[in-house]
Length: 123
Image (cartoon, rainbow, N blue to C red; front, side, top):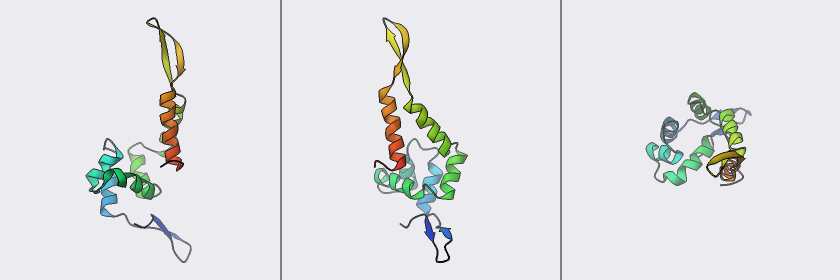
C-alpha cells in the first residue's frame, strides 16, 4: 500500500483515493468498540495486526480526520483527554472515610503510554 499523499513532479501534494477496505474501516471506526473490531468489520484478514497499520497510514487523510471530527474525536479532544489522564487522582480512604486524593499512577501510566504511541515513540 502506498502512503496517503504523494508529491507530484510539479510539487503539489496529491491525496490518493482510499481503498474499499479503508473506506469501510473509517465508516466502522466511530461505532466499533475498538480499532481491532473496526478492522474486523471492514474485512481485514488480520485485524489485530492491520488496525494499527491502517491508522498510521490514514492519520493525515482528509476523509479520516473529517470522520473522526464528525464523531467528536478531534485531535484537541484526544489531547485534552490524555492530559486529564496524566493528572488523574483517586480518593484515599482510611477507616471507611475519604481523607483526600492521591495520584492514580496506574491511570497516569496508561495515559502516558497512549500519548507515546500516538507520538510514534512506541509501537
